[in-house]
Length: 534
Image 1 (cartoon, one colour):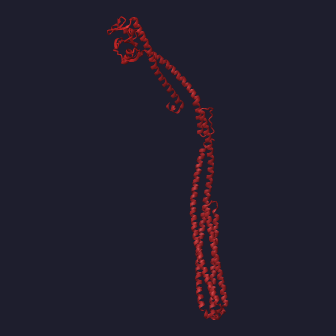
Image 2: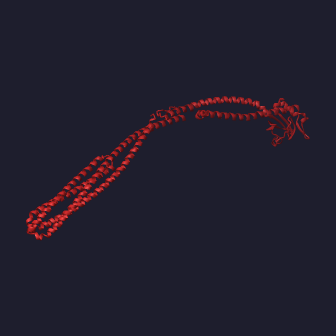
């Protein structure tokens, strides 16, 4: 029962109303008991006092008089032995001891006669009101656990002086039967009133409050279950109507919000799918760049090795040229002895000149190779820069294109290395031929000193040419070293690219993981949104 009351507003309200009515009834009965009882006692007491005094006047006519401390009514002295008070009390109570009245006569404040065996004294307020001021007075006294409503009236002599007190008391028990009947009637009326009021109030509350509220609750349950097409139809302009209208507005806004969430969810899902594809493409691109970078690194290391070989060969050529210069100096020292024979070696010297020209051509080729190597190094730097731009940029260019660029550059460097090797071989062959020619020239010059005199200038020029060749070879050597350093820088940049690639790889994996989480979130959100019927 308590659980039903806790869960039902209607039962709570009915219980409160019934409790309030019962409290009102009890308070009303208590008030009626106090007011009506006192009113009845007052009327009965006044009536008994008047009736008793009339009986006293009929039986003992005359005025009241105080004769030497003795109270007289007319010619009759008032003494307790005469039983005047008992007779009057018997008349007033109709000789029914159940509702025995109290009758007493006082001379001033001295009790002269009474019908009870108790000593009764006048209180100070009674003496003040009745004896001094000659006023009637009422109060309640208790005798032997019984309550009495007492009326006091002054006794006056013929001069109008207050010489005594006439007292009549009515017991409270006299009104019990009367009040019982009154309480029964009032209780019946109140119970019937409670039933009628409760029924009318319940019906009114059902019509005004509980039925509309139950209708609203049923609709809100449908809304809570996800049916946002539900509408609370309540044609009223009071608070219930306002509540229904606000619920409809709330449902409409909730419906719109669910639609917006659904649209946003679709957009998020599409975006997450795109992000997932981009992450996968980025991962593939990074893997391609990684593979191409490794290939370029291997190619550059190969170029470095070949360049080192070229540098060694150039050093060897330079060594032989230096030796040739020393021999030319020795030949120049011996020119005075072979001047006559040198004239006969003009043809051989021309051949030597032609060989020197070939050497010059070879050095030109080496210079050309160095220039092309520089250009290829520059191209490799550009290709590396493009690869770096691809990684840091939009990420939409395929890494395979730049990988092929690196392969082409490496192939060109390899071809130039082969060409350089061939040129070096030609230099060696020419130098060997030159040495043979010089040997022949030396033999002829030994026999033809006089003919070589005119060729001294040419020999000096050859010496200058050799010095220029030595200088150019030194430059080639420096350029080769620069190529090696450039390749080292390129390798460093490629290592940085690899590091960037690793970071991008981590970022791509993180993006992919976030995309997967976003997809899961979107699926859960779809599940929640699909519960609503819009």
